[in-house]
Image (cartoon, rainbow, N blue to C red; front, side, top):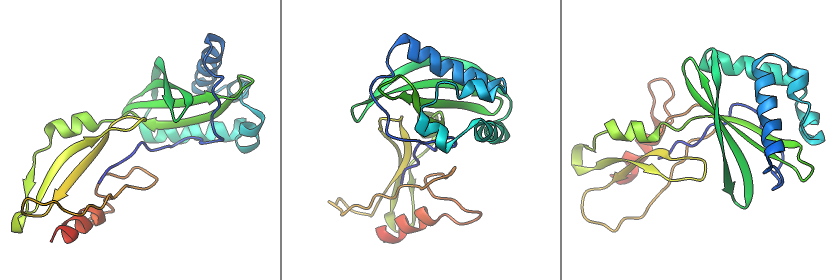
Length: 201
């Protein structure tokens, strides 16, 4: 059971490989700073045509408003780093908010225009797993906390094993969109945990 990086912003178009220069990085930073300052027209200045068709300045203002409702007041923009994922280059920029850090994920097309603009919370998998303890359920079922590596950052996970030495068949349960934990908790219900325990029995 794993929880992935959750997008709360804009996910548009496949990213190109041209957004690697200092000028492109400056364009991304300028867009993020303008967005934080409420200057939505300036924020979309370097968006690609396709990105603008899907998300204009008014829509971008709504995205930022919803982000601050979720994460609290904006605290500042941190450093950036480039990552290659499936042959494409993405710029990861840390953004601090009152209730936690998020990462802005950006990439550009061949003309250096921003065509990928997305948000996600900074992975807390390592911290969660550091304080988690293995649990043995009734009947000898074992639940082991672990992390799963991914190109977007480590994912917190739980490995649920039947009693005995195995080998065992495996089922991978991955949480969907939204701020879900690895159990897909909805109110008092934990459907992924129930599935894992049921399959292990």
